Image (cartoon, rainbow, N blue to C red):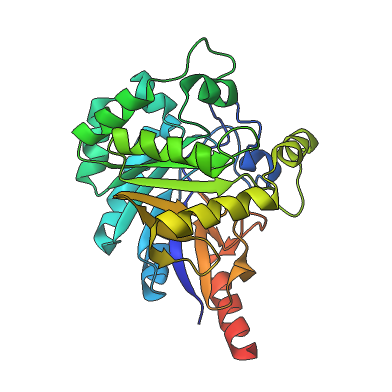
Length: 306
């Protein structure tokens, strides 16, 4: 049977406070997720946790089609349920803005999330330079968030931090730029640095975003050069089944990966199980998803046909 590496519950709705021109949620189907968040079906989520654990899934990543931290109470609801299942890694993917602004996500939220098992917070960035990040995420604001201060703030609550870098042409697009990104991560004691080239799904519902991605896509030569650099200076900690790997570069953890999932990336290891708030599950952002019983049935059919 297919094992899953990652369970990904979707928090909240489509609303987001950033303006990423490469927004994946803008390209992939809405799948019933609307601007306003619906209350998640928590009993269905508990059942999906049981299924995930039975299929060797040890990691949970809270994410959203929008920005998950706009719904801090929903984050807490999911954390309270997952706590019974003892996932090895429990993470939250965010642009970091609502946490840095200290308006929507309070210190009390951060304390509660930590108490209910959230271990790592992954912050999406495109660069080590604040102005470059502002142009991408907050073009409508005068200044970007104080990223070093945000990292220190999260560390003070006991969180590990990952900087999740989307690599774009003209931003982090070479080993020379990557070295500076690694130096920034090291300086601020960031536990993990992930780099992934910007990507687009096979079909997209937003032409403007698709055009941006096509114009800012990393050429194959840049990816090859970056990988060769990591191979030469880093020690391989883990090779990932879908390509890329995790390296130790002079004490800094660096993961090179890609940003989109497809169910067929690896025959034996489904990369992730996506939980939609209404109780449906999917193994691909492009698919609408089905309820768990139908999903299990489909998995069993696949297995008996192999």
